[in-house]
Length: 164
Image 1 (cartoon, rainbow, N blue to C red):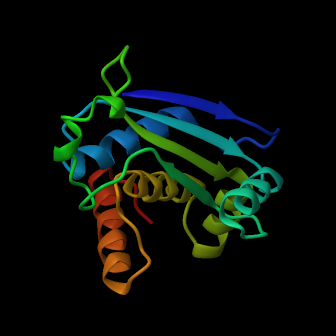
Image 2 (cartoon, one colour):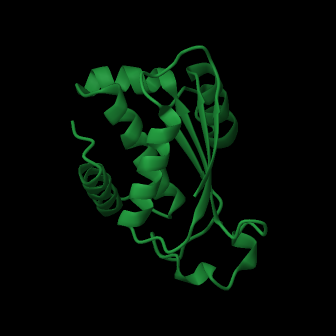
């Protein structure tokens, strides 16, 4: 896996964010049986910047915890089988599947960890797992989709022993 990692703002989370992101991305993709090596872009930023992105890309005028920008369209969530014949889904130099971009607000990670009563590390890992599922075609617009995503997120974090 190639992870293009960038961090903005002076606020630092109390662990190696890049290493944990790699662990969770790999764990999530293994859990949902992604057969490819992948490429993911991750930006850690602050509330002001993610607020601007949320407004510009989703027409929602407030900060959010995480934004996911999938590069691929799925017929069925987590079904990677139809990409094999689509060359433009892969980086021509590395052969990696181009999953997409993740943007996370470090301020929201800290605030939500406190609100939900678990560690900052657990909240960050949760947001990474959540976003990887979005990049893999999962969503939570309908009740059954929400239940499936929540179940997968919990199972992925349990597999990685990143507990509440």
